[in-house]
Length: 291
Image (cartoon, rainbow, N blue to C red; front, side):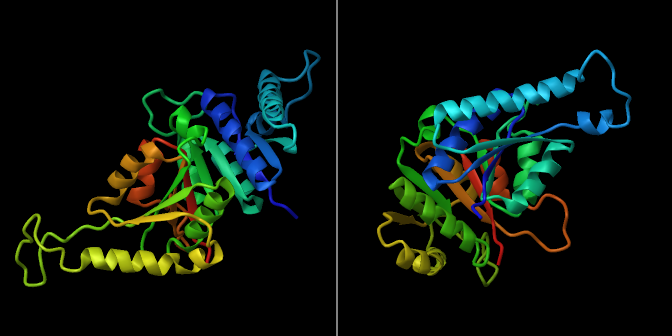
């Protein structure tokens, strides 16, 4: 069975951009598209007697939201199979559950009713921190959203957190026939092994070499599996989040890995993922490490 690409829809402008991006992605991968609107009206209305005036306004709104999103998707690509659903759940809970049987979950950067000053909507943040499949938060400028940079950015974390993210990135780069920029940032410690403060601009003491070796080791299997993907490897010094946010301006998608801790049910996102989800200038894919 082919897993669908799931999109959370709520009628917001951000959601419509997510639908457009997801249609292109579904067409690229040959996937069906599943549009999900989560609304609690059905739960609240379930125990109430029916009235002659017809369905409640929230039901009408939910039906309009999914119908409009489906029409938009079908206009963008008639070849992509589109299904819709309205579920009586909290939006974040619903999308996390949908992710258990999805290729990926796609959300907008802000939902309907979110405060304008928010950098990222609460639903997108919650889903990215809890889902067990890749989560893409669609944000950024028109050039990146349209894939015109022809470049994907992959931020590599520690060993054991990025294997699935690497596979995801190479697959995307191969399907898009674009360059894959792989970045492993590093920082020298404030003090050396003897306790002396490290002089700014002094010798890197092997930290850069260590970052390069880790990068090579994590890419070896993927390069063998995808020999035609053009890769560019860099090991800049600096905070990884800041480095990746800066480079996201020239990318169509930035990808990072994360590892969920067993028995921990809160948000499980590190500083780098948080920085990208709030400040990236292109769509962000957070890929959980499943093995």
